[in-house]
Length: 99
Image 1 (cartoon, rainbow, N blue to C red):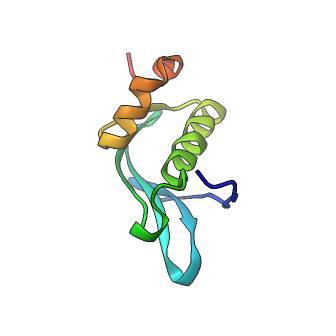
Image 2: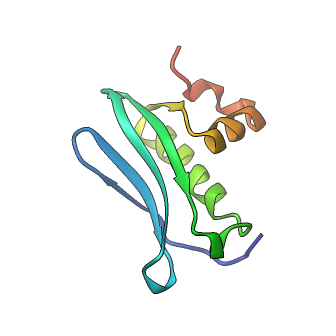
Image 3: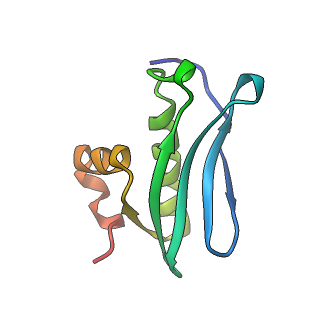
Protein backbone atom coordinates (compact mmCIF):
# COMPACT_ATOMS: atom_id res chain seq x y z
CA UNK A 1 0.00 0.00 0.00
CA UNK A 2 1.24 3.44 -0.84
CA UNK A 3 1.85 6.17 1.69
CA UNK A 4 0.96 8.78 -0.94
CA UNK A 5 -2.12 10.85 -0.21
CA UNK A 6 -4.63 11.88 -2.85
CA UNK A 7 -7.28 14.58 -2.88
CA UNK A 8 -10.77 13.11 -3.17
CA UNK A 9 -13.68 15.11 -4.55
CA UNK A 10 -17.42 14.45 -4.47
CA UNK A 11 -19.23 15.34 -7.69
CA UNK A 12 -23.00 14.97 -7.97
CA UNK A 13 -26.22 16.04 -9.58
CA UNK A 14 -29.85 15.38 -8.65
CA UNK A 15 -29.75 11.65 -9.41
CA UNK A 16 -26.16 10.41 -9.28
CA UNK A 17 -22.58 11.22 -8.45
CA UNK A 18 -19.12 9.97 -7.78
CA UNK A 19 -16.11 10.24 -5.53
CA UNK A 20 -13.06 10.84 -7.70
CA UNK A 21 -9.28 10.98 -7.39
CA UNK A 22 -7.50 12.68 -10.26
CA UNK A 23 -4.28 10.83 -10.98
CA UNK A 24 -1.37 11.47 -13.32
CA UNK A 25 -1.79 11.88 -17.08
CA UNK A 26 -5.54 12.45 -16.86
CA UNK A 27 -6.28 9.10 -15.21
CA UNK A 28 -9.01 8.94 -12.58
CA UNK A 29 -10.04 6.51 -9.87
CA UNK A 30 -13.72 6.69 -9.02
CA UNK A 31 -16.57 5.31 -6.99
CA UNK A 32 -19.96 6.01 -8.56
CA UNK A 33 -23.35 6.16 -6.90
CA UNK A 34 -27.03 6.70 -7.56
CA UNK A 35 -29.33 8.58 -5.22
CA UNK A 36 -32.05 6.06 -4.45
CA UNK A 37 -33.83 8.01 -1.68
CA UNK A 38 -33.40 11.46 -0.14
CA UNK A 39 -31.06 10.02 2.49
CA UNK A 40 -29.67 6.97 0.64
CA UNK A 41 -27.06 6.35 -2.05
CA UNK A 42 -26.37 3.09 -3.88
CA UNK A 43 -22.68 2.52 -4.63
CA UNK A 44 -22.62 0.74 -7.99
CA UNK A 45 -19.01 0.88 -9.20
CA UNK A 46 -15.45 1.38 -7.97
CA UNK A 47 -12.69 1.63 -10.53
CA UNK A 48 -8.94 2.22 -10.35
CA UNK A 49 -6.77 2.31 -13.49
CA UNK A 50 -4.54 -0.80 -13.79
CA UNK A 51 -1.31 1.15 -13.26
CA UNK A 52 -2.56 2.30 -9.84
CA UNK A 53 -4.02 -0.93 -8.51
CA UNK A 54 -2.60 -2.45 -5.34
CA UNK A 55 -1.83 0.96 -3.82
CA UNK A 56 -4.89 1.24 -1.58
CA UNK A 57 -6.64 3.82 -3.74
CA UNK A 58 -9.99 2.00 -3.82
CA UNK A 59 -9.84 1.75 -0.02
CA UNK A 60 -9.20 5.50 0.18
CA UNK A 61 -12.38 6.09 -1.82
CA UNK A 62 -14.37 3.79 0.47
CA UNK A 63 -12.98 5.41 3.62
CA UNK A 64 -13.80 8.87 2.31
CA UNK A 65 -17.35 7.82 1.38
CA UNK A 66 -17.89 6.28 4.83
CA UNK A 67 -16.71 9.47 6.57
CA UNK A 68 -18.94 11.48 4.23
CA UNK A 69 -21.95 9.27 5.04
CA UNK A 70 -21.48 9.85 8.76
CA UNK A 71 -20.91 13.59 8.29
CA UNK A 72 -23.90 14.11 5.97
CA UNK A 73 -26.18 11.54 7.60
CA UNK A 74 -26.99 9.34 4.62
CA UNK A 75 -27.35 5.58 4.26
CA UNK A 76 -25.38 3.39 1.87
CA UNK A 77 -26.53 0.46 -0.25
CA UNK A 78 -23.43 -1.36 -1.52
CA UNK A 79 -23.95 -3.02 -4.91
CA UNK A 80 -20.35 -2.83 -6.13
CA UNK A 81 -18.58 -6.07 -5.20
CA UNK A 82 -15.58 -4.22 -3.74
CA UNK A 83 -17.76 -2.10 -1.46
CA UNK A 84 -19.83 -5.13 -0.44
CA UNK A 85 -16.59 -6.87 0.61
CA UNK A 86 -15.50 -3.80 2.61
CA UNK A 87 -18.83 -3.68 4.46
CA UNK A 88 -18.38 -7.37 5.34
CA UNK A 89 -14.90 -6.62 6.71
CA UNK A 90 -16.20 -3.66 8.73
CA UNK A 91 -19.31 -4.64 10.69
CA UNK A 92 -19.01 -1.33 12.56
CA UNK A 93 -20.39 0.31 9.41
CA UNK A 94 -23.65 -1.68 9.58
CA UNK A 95 -25.46 1.37 10.99
CA UNK A 96 -25.02 3.00 7.57
CA UNK A 97 -27.04 0.28 5.85
CA UNK A 98 -30.76 0.99 5.35
CA UNK A 99 -33.02 -0.72 7.87
